[in-house]
Length: 338
Image 1 (cartoon, rainbow, N blue to C red):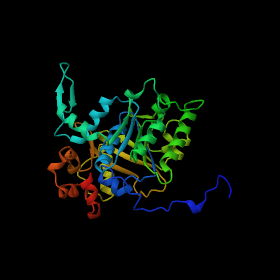
Image 2: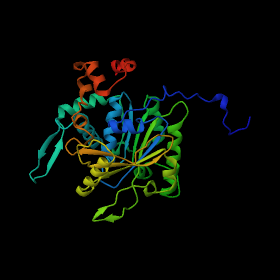
Image 3: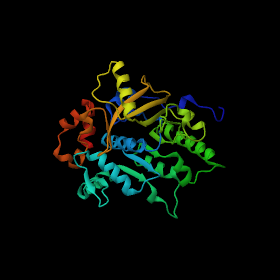
Image 4: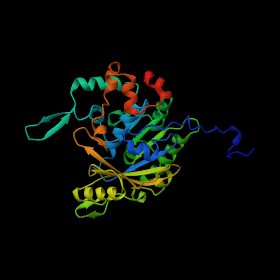
């Protein structure tokens, strides 16, 4: 036996039944990429303010409602900001209220009683590491994530790579070496045999080219800021791009030419930047965005989808849930335990 060489006799046999994908919040992504597969590292990029964090907050909610426990590293948000984002997406536009400040600024918020219900529901389901979790008793990020994995978490969101190297004690002579080492360790953590997890990683793009007074969309994975090895290490890459009015009409025409039944001009485009080991035959996904609830959607049913049912789970029937999620008969037991 040679040290450092794989011994095939001890390999775990892969079974698709055991590697069940986690559902996306959007039907088009579930159809386009088969949801999110454990053992895969997904990279998300896009210009500042275009919706990377908002989109992944929605995917966190979808994972929680798919029966997953979730770990979320939010390097730029406080605990209260994270909870507010989750609440708006979870409850939807009909529950979000608006407060008008004396300056005229209108702020969207969620009622305190609803927040309390959500906090109770999140207990034991969502593990959050944010700006409020740094003190003199520093704990290594991978030690925290390993603890979450032992608690049953198999869905991880790291937002974002730049704050990781600033806040966490990653070894390296400069930012690029720190990033590379972190992503190498992250990939090993994601793909550890028998402990595979879904891993989302957010990274900012390089300074964009300005076209017509607006930053150009991110259409190539090499536009990701930092060491060039990071894009090489991920399995799938997306960019989130907010559209202006002219761009909305352009993509509407593109969709019509493809023969798609289109009822709206998209607000946001998810560009597919890279696929490795994942089947995806689309160059982009066109979606809409609701500014009140911060929900992304492709049809009205997704915008007004009742994602708050778990807070009053006893009042909902299994048939309602199965219809909403199109659950297979074999998965009914999981819903009951949910």
